[in-house]
Image (cartoon, rainbow, N blue to C red; front, side):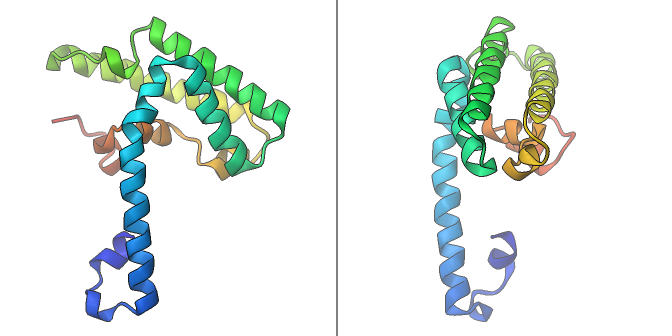
Length: 152
């Protein structure tokens, strides 16, 4: 999408223009869903179900494998809530927020690593499971676009 957007519109074919428009629509839909997805952190059952469905469909998991993903992600959401690392508990004070964000980033890395280890070989890569995906789903776009930078 970024490459097509940078190209002068006059140089795009009709198919490329349609594809760019479709990609822009999909992007807008995803951005509209992200607040709801981030809210799943506060509801472990929905958090587990969301990840189960996403990974099962994208990686072609069996029902028992999907059940394992669901159980693991529910447990992680419960722990996230117990530790106060869910989105609803983000501190408003900038000094407190930085330390909270660092703890949450470490938690997400552990979650992604555990999920990668839980899945059959190649499934995590096929589904795009990574700490960066978890950051994206939490709407931490600044980390996705410029890793290592702090929030403004």
